[in-house]
Each structure stands twice: as structure tokens, then as C-alpha cells.
Amino acid sequence: MRLAILGAGDVGRSVADLASEYGHEVVAIADSSDAAVDPSGIDVERTLERKVGNEPVGTAAPEDVFETEYDVLIEATPTTLDDAEPGFTHTKRALEADRHVVLANKGPVAERYGELRALEAESAGSIRFEATVGGAIPVLSTIEDSTPQAVTTVRGVLNGTANFILTRMAAEGLDYEHVLAEAQDLGVAEADPTFDVDGTDAALKFVILANVLSDGGFSLSDATVEGIQNIPGSALDLAAEDGRTIRLIGEATRESVRVGPRLVPENGALAVTGTRNIVQIETRHAGSLASSGRGAGGPETATAVLSDVGRLPTR
Amino acid sequence: MRLAILGAGDVGRSVADLASEYGHEVVAIADSSDAAVDPSGIDVERTLERKVGNEPVGTAAPEDVFETEYDVLIEATPTTLDDAEPGFTHTKRALEADRHVVLANKGPVAERYGELRALEAESAGSIRFEATVGGAIPVLSTIEDSTPQAVTTVRGVLNGTANFILTRMAAEGLDYEHVLAEAQDLGVAEADPTFDVDGTDAALKFVILANVLSDGGFSLSDATVEGIQNIPGSALDLAAEDGRTIRLIGEATRESVRVGPRLVPENGALAVTGTRNIVQIETRHAGSLASSGRGAGGPETATAVLSDVGRLPTR
Image (cartoon, rainbow over all chains, first blue to last red; front, side):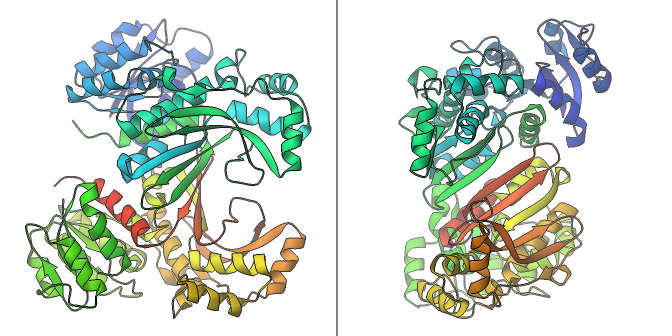
């Protein structure tokens, strides 16, 4: 398939880099100011070199991407909340042009799910968004194959930054501020880590899961969210004395979405370490399925995007 | 889709029972002596009652199934080795009639993989076999979506009977014979448990995985296999002193298939407990994905069969 990639951050660049390995061609890639467009396939290597070298990715304008002949729009621009723009309108334009859209951008899927599905119903194109939940871990495709009606609850750890911080606090007996600084030095936490540590990032993912289970009805404002910023090191010490630790756990059902710190057994499945993520899917007929893996990262998230491309119907 | 089910054991009956929940219709079900056939859909409830009550499932002959109008043959007859008959010929006949086949029977996929793929290439029908590996855990679909070339190794615990026995031996300090008897009482081990305890069942699954990674080339005779029958309780005690335990671990790469008892960290991912299974998929770009869940059981395996039906191309 011919891919038009919006967003040239870690995810967009990795999708461009791995596309040919999955048998696909990149006909366009754009960041917020420039675009590289070539209907016969862009020179991925040189384009990525330019981006990484802080040069314009190409000589076209981002708007030109929509005029290109492409099969799938890859929406990998930064997640935004509320109106989820410009990601929502990017998706809308592609669907209205009967093109497929694969999203890594959580905004439209968490905040305007019903509208997306309505646009999809009117389009010859389909939307897929595995990459919005759990990076490389195949969460949404597992739910899709089991059929959403067979799934009762999805629970787990879906933010690697918060998980890393809690793992380090417990392991070293250090306090939150200290470990956050360490995480930022390592590139595990952003300069502005708010959405990771206040639970918003995890909540967006569990909102998406609730939307999948219920076919819509949820947005971020429906989630009950608590972050990890106020957990003292002493809380983790106390937990350890009882064979437990603390993790930022989210849970989505058809009725609700919650994210918050929870006590979990120290050696249990939910006590994943470092930046690893885990999802537990409770099913009606097959008990509980647990999947863990890398929840974030350019190549990791790109594999989820490219898996989705492989699952699109041929138009 | 209209399903024709061969095999009325736990798996075949569960597929019949759950089919309508997944939007499919059962037009035939056969055991080794009789069949129930109805092109407008059999009465599943009454048919299952007859089978469970030891009456003939229906008034037709098993051969009649192939004369029915169906879309997908569900091959759920008992796994056989070497020539994998009659499962192989059942699959061949359906493909030669341009029908899809979804297998829960490991025999044809482990022992005659190349021949199956050749028949599939000549057919308008497709074969899928998620249910042959790991029950409810979506192993093969995960590899398929990641693309097999991106997967380097698949490792894990894929036999719940052997895992249950080792778990109980470690937990209670009991010897193998004692725990095997307990497992048989609980229905976790068969009256003839040979294939579970000697590693054959696990080996068939890892042979199937190697065939998927390499597009064929392996059969059971290529696997290096050791079972659990000779593990003394003292070995588990010794392991425990070192923070480890013993599990029957299999590993498939493009080069080899091995199954045997291994020391694993007591609290590590591979030390799943009871009858639970786990698979670790090592990938080129996304690190390691681990999926655990129920590896066996009628409803569990049926969900894998029905997931596969949902992923078939419409003919």
C-alpha cells in the first residue's frame, strides 16, 4: 500500500523507516511546516536524514499530502485533547476521500470516537488504531478477534514513564522528584512529563478501550483519573513489607474508565518493571489473557501501525 | 459463515455452542460414527444434548458433511502423527472443493505443513490454525500481524498438564507419580497422559511455530524433545533454594525446535502456574512480547477457532 505519513516525530519516522520491510511504499511524509511528496515513493533515507539534521523534510507543503495518490493516511501527529485537532480533521479529510486511516494519535479516537465511526461508515476507507494503545502489544486486534462483546474488562499498566518511576522508587528507596529527574535524564520522561505522571496518557488509552468495548460513548472527561505525583517513598516501603508494590493501573469496562495508583502483589503479573506495559483482557469464555511488552518507542509503535496497515481491507 | 464441524469432542462441541454468538451458523457436525446435517442450520442445543447423552449426534453419516453447502470446515478431530490422517484428507477435500478450513487438529499442520500450503495455493479457500497453538492465546495471529520475518524466536510453556504437575510438585514437595494421579483425578491429565508428559504435545505446537516462521520445513521428527517424567522432587527443592523452579519450556526458531525441562526464575514470566500457558515472541523491532492465558479447554480453544473464522477472506 502507498502510505502518506502525517507527523515526522519518533513514530512517523519509524513508520517511514520500516515501511518497505512490510511491503509498503511511502509516498509522502509531513511535519508541521514541510512535506516530502513523491507519488513513485520518496527517498526515505535521505528524507529522514534531513529531518534529523533539522532541515526541512522536503520542498512541498504539508497541505500537498492530501493531493497525492495514497492508499493509507498514517496519522502520527501529536495527541491533542478536546477537539483533537488537527488530527481529527486530517482523519476526516482522508475518509471523505475514501482513503484508509491508521492512527497513532490518541486524540481523535479518545475524544471524538462516535464522529470517527460515523465518517468511516460513509467512506470506502476504514480506520484502525492499534498503535494508540500499548505500543507493540496487540491489544485492540486481540479484542477485535475475540469480538468486543466477549470481553468484559481490560485492565493494566499502559504508561511506561509512570511505571519506570514507580519501579525505581521502590527499588532504590528514592523519592518521586529524584526519580523523575533521573527519568528525564534518560529520556524516559519528557521535559514536560505532566500527561505521563498525572495519568492523562494512560486514561486516554483506557478511554479508547472503553470506546471499543461499547462502540463509543466515552471521552477523557468521563474517566476518573489520579496520577503518581503525590506518592511518597514511604508508601512503597510500607507496601513492600506486605509483599506488595504500587503501580499506576487503569481499568476499562463498558460502564467506566478509571486510572490511579493501586497496590499490587510484588511478584504478580501487574507489577511489570521499568517502562514495560501489560494488559489483562478478561473474556467470557476464555478466562483472562495477559499481554506484556514495550508500550512505547518509535519502532515499537511503528510495528503496531504497520500491523494495522496489513489488516486493512483492500479497497 | 456456515460452519461444518468435524469432531464432536470438547472443542467441536464448544465451537457449535458459541458459533451463533460470533454471528455464524452450524450446518453440520460429525463424530467418528454419525453426523447431524442441515443446510438451514442444525439445532445445536438438541444435537449437543444427544452427544452428551451418548446418543448418535444425528441421522446422517460423517461422509455426508462433505456434500453439504458450507463455507468453512472446522477440523477438530483428534490430533494424529506421521500421516496425520484422517485430518489431512479432511482438509484436502475441503480445499479441493474451494472451501476454507480452520484447524484445531495439530497433526496436519505439524507433520505435513508444506503439502497443506500447496493445496491452499491451488484453492479459493484458505487455512487458519490459531487453535493448534496456545488455545485462547493469540499467538499465530500476533506473528502474522507482526509479519513472520520480524519474529526471531518463540519460546514458552504450551502444555498445561505438564505445567500443572510441575507447579504442584514444587508447591507441595510431592513426587511426580503422586501429582500425576492428582492431575488425572482433576481431569487435568488424561487417562493416557503420555503426549502431555513426554513433551510431544508441546513439541507439536513448537513445530507448528517453526513452520510458520520458516514457511515450512519442520515435522515432529525434527524436534529435540524431553519430557518431565524423570524429574525427581529433589530437583525442584534444589532449584527453589536458588530462587528458581522447573518448567517444560519449548523454543522455536527458523533453525530448530526444542522442548525440555528448564530452570527458570521462580518469579519470572516463564514460571506460569497451574495449567496456564505463556508465549514469548522475540521481534526485530519491538523487543519481546509475552502473552499468557488458558492454553486448553473446549470454550477457550473454540474462541481461537472462531477468531480464525472471523479473519478468513470472504470468498
